[in-house]
Amino acid sequence: MFSVVSDRRARAGLKTTAAPPKSNEVTSEETEAHLEQHQQKLEEEHKRMLERYAESQRLLDKYSVMPGKGADYMALLQRITDENSADTRRSRQPLVLKKISDSLTEAYLPFNDDLELREQYINVYGGIRLGKVLEDLDRLAGAVAYKHASDANGDLAPVVFVTAAVDRIDLRSRLQSKCNYRLKGMVTFVGFSSMEIRIQMQAMSKAGRAEAEPNLVARFTMVARDKYTGKSAQINPLLLADETERRLVKLSEQIKENKKASAESTLQKHPPNAEERRVIHSLWLDTKQAQNNAYGQHASLPPDSVWLHDTTMSSTTVCFPESRNVHQKVFGGFLMRLAHELSFANGSVFTKSRPYYEALHDFSFAKPVNIGSILKFTSQVVYSEPEHRTFQIAVTTDVIDIPTDSTERTNTFYFNFSSPDTVPRVVPRSYEDMMKYLE
Image (cartoon, rainbow, N blue to C red):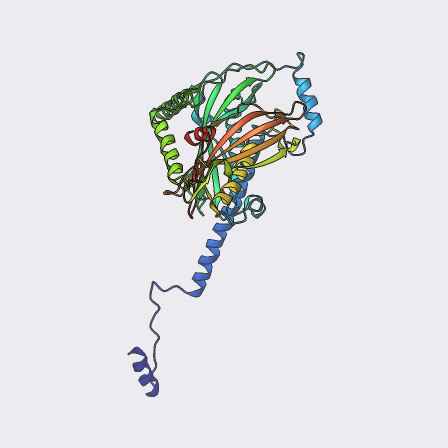
């Protein structure tokens, strides 16, 4: 209507006046300025994220479980020999009370802002290699332990820490390659020479704040040894500041008690109970029902099933100095990564699809692995639930002793996976496989 009136006035020689712009209209100049301001904020946050990453790496290097870059292997061995001599041993400073917040250590994985870092972690599907993250978790747990054990001045104490156990690592949501993450670790329980460390991994928003819900939660148990004698070393006791921290420690104590009870009821010490015997009998009945009455055949495989002993996949590796920790042993995170990658490969073959990691169950590092060792990793699908499309893979790690032609077990890892496709039912055939299935 306004345009029609304007046209009539123009034809009549009347002067027309443009209507003033509305207050909520935005000019192109204002839009461009707003975009420039937004871009500037993104660049500033990108710079801050890289600074956080660099600072966290410096902290991890200070309380490191890994040798520094460019460290000479033979020179490190000579330094350890020199430090262990009686003339150069450092006396330990008095123990100090430490708060949970004193051990708080953060690390960053800025996959979105650091393309070179992303390239090291990305997998063939465009996601994140979880095995690499497992290495980072073990490294961070070591840094938290050394930080808690430091003296009043923050200097390292003459103790060494080893990863005694991983209580559990749960992946609550998938990790994305175009996202920045923060890893935050802290001590939640302290004994005489051991401590429990809780680590959570959180996505970072574009504003640089960590999301409330963690993507990953892990619990590690670290044990202190005297640097010179190798005996148990007492560590700084924990000072609880408030009720929240007391509840956190109480929860850690309960988890520790549950682990002890579970270890006492293992099938290595006790025969199967009534419920477990019922499961064994049910599996046996299933194989009898599928029997085709062929001569000499005592059991047959039920439909959509796989014999447990047919799901074996193995790999062998030589442990080179690049995989060592500061104690000149093989880094525990390295073992976790190789075990995870083998379990993923086995799970892919088992389901004929891409499996998704869900959790790593509790396990212990039974024995340290020396540099130069030949390691054999053996994986098996030991349990599956087709109705839930989930399954579990056990990976054993054995050191091969060439002169004696024997092996020594160092670890057994249990990885839980899910699958978007059908999961076969795994069926044990021998008594040994039955025990693996029940465990």
